[in-house]
Amino acid sequence: MLRMILGEAGTGKTTEVLRQIKEAAGRRQSVLLLVPEHASFEMERRVSALFTGEEQQYITLLSFPRLAEKIFRECGGLTQRPLDEVSRALLMREAISEVQERLTLYRRQAGYTGFISSMLQTVADFKRAGITPARLEEIAAETAGTALGQKLTDLQLIYEAFQALVELRFHDPLDELALALGRAAEKNWFAGRHIWVDSFDYFSVSERALLEQMLLSAESLTLSMTCPALDAGEDIFLYQKKFLLRMRAYAGAHALMCEEPLILTKDKRHQSPALAGLQRAFTRPETVPPAAGESLRLIEAPTVYEEMRFAAAEIARLVREEGLRYRDCVILCRDLDRYRNAKTVLEEYDLPYFCGEKQNILFAPLPFFLLTALEAASGSLKTAAILRLARSAASGLSPQQAGALENYSFIWNISGEDWLRPFTGNPEGMSDAAPEDYAAALAQVEASYDFILIDCPPSLELLTLNGLCACDSILIPVQCEYYALEGLSELISTLKTVRKKYNPYLDIEGVVFTMFSVRYNLTLQVVEQVKKYFGNKVYQTTIPRSIRISEAPSYGQPINFYEPKGKGSEAYMDLAIEFVKNNRPHEPAKRRGKGSSAPAEPKNALEEVKQGEV
Image 1 (cartoon, one colour):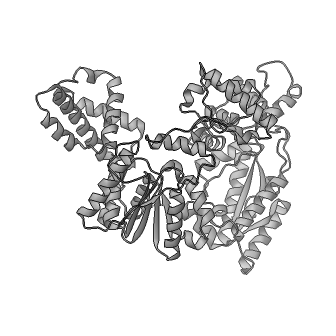
Image 2 (cartoon, helix red, strand yellow):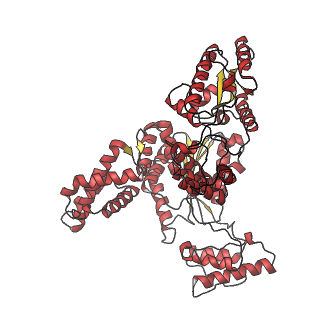
Image 3 (cartoon, one colour):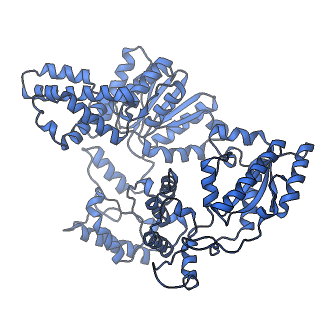
């Protein structure tokens, strides 16, 4: 069944959609609400505010790309990795090379580097328009013998070769909606669902095909669009009218019920009659435009700077004389690029403002920090990534600290595992100064981090030995099992060897009991034996035996995310707190430096544990 909700902007179409959805959710019907990607966050907020938790269980809110992802997740179909921009360019280059000798009009241009980007854009346009290589071949045949026919033939050869290469190894995100349509039709994925579509002004070919499939399979499809009436008149709503009439004809051709459109006419948005009249003047050409008055003024200025000066002066007057707040004032620009430099006028008037420019989320402080941290830690430690990490707003370092760290890394050529060792060189570079003369400056550089934790595998292999050579101290987890005592004995032997030959400053930070349960006598015996030899090095916190801790890795989550309020999560939090209390960050390093001699043998836990006694 096809239903339509029509009306101009501000007539309450979305409110009516949510009202109908609430009724459907109250009847425990499966609801799918489709909105544009940019409107999904605001719609999620409204749904969360208007619907109870039980009602939300029956509602799925998606955009078209997220709908495709959900279909693939539930029905399968994407077994190959997505095509990224670099791979896309390489495959296009390979496709052009394959067919270059068969080209006629574009043979010479095919050798130019810029031709690749041009063809990538052309193929992307074809896909968005729903034109396949086979359809392009048909169009080329219809225009054979003309310059257009030659051009289309060349484009078809390149497009076909490119698509064949893509399908061998990748899936193209531009094809996802078309692929999702096939999977949804095959699995009858829309069956039993009541679907509402809201806030769209335009649908691509692939989106229209999905809507047609929804109309065939779903219980009902409700389209909400900005359109005052469903007639054949030509106005600014011509596309919406053509689309809706086409959907109604499609429903009739397949013997599907189509209700009369619900047309909303009452303006629920504008408080000012003049502004409401201004909107009607745009949407209804026969309407007489409202006259200028208190609510509506037309100002003509020679430049955008003069426009902005008028706006700034008027805002300042409204705040000063009429008691408005700055947040009550909005400046709307049709083209923000034209007014980008004119924003300086607001600064001249000392007006606080927020500019709603589209920004790449990857450059926001937190995502940038996380991505840079992953880049820095993947493989060997990368100096450039670590320095970007230090300069990010989420690192907690001041610009002076980040600058000091960057200067030190350049002076002493810090790279790779050097970042895991304490800094002992003079921050000013090579000089005759004694270490105590630059100890304060060095401590400032080392204050750029608190702790560096190296997670080692549960075996005494090369990775573990490298970690032992690089660290100051080790924290030993001990399972409360008999064989763990034998492994602990081998570990102590290895630690003594590493300390003797490679790292004379290696110490034991502590011992932590894991899989701890007071119900087993063996647990208490292991604890007694370990405490006998390690004394106050044994942490008071113990990690309990928990099936949740064992399950968490299989779901790709740490226990703090998998079960935040469980006893395992709380135990690890207690362990972190105890570790921080036992260590005071930002102390000057007392370890080895390049070229420095080892101090006198210190007394530490390794000296108190005899090999073979554990």
